[in-house]
Amino acid sequence: MDIREIIARYQDKPGGLIEAYHAIQDEFNYLPQEAIREASLAFGISEAQAYGVATFYSYLSVEKRGKYIIRMCESAPCHVAGADELLKALEKTLGIEVGQTTPDGKFTLELAECVGQCQETPVITINSVPYTDMSPDKISAVLAQCT
Image (cartoon, rainbow, N blue to C red; front, side):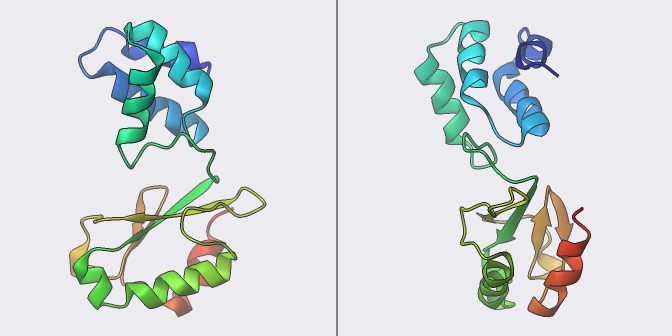
């Protein structure tokens, strides 16, 4: 779908800019510069303001990201349950560090403050789908599901 078409669906709605950004990111996995430029025109704000909204929320990204976005929960319950070891294992398995994307563009690794699954820690999400009670030995099987 075209960026202008996506923006047009939300242009007259309260909070439409953020909704449009979410829809664009669902389509492209990030917010291309063109999206910020088009949003500024459609919503009648400066490009700097549109960029400010795009970069304020941690869920939105103006950087190109992988097809699968892995978010490691770093909240206190996950930390106590072994999130540090899990994060190290993810970085080793993927060959990247937090904030990076694999060279093939398949995975991006990010941190999240809490994903609301504290009853089964540690937790990662892949494209917002939670994987609970994770451990380093489960990583390969979970990543194998990402085709």
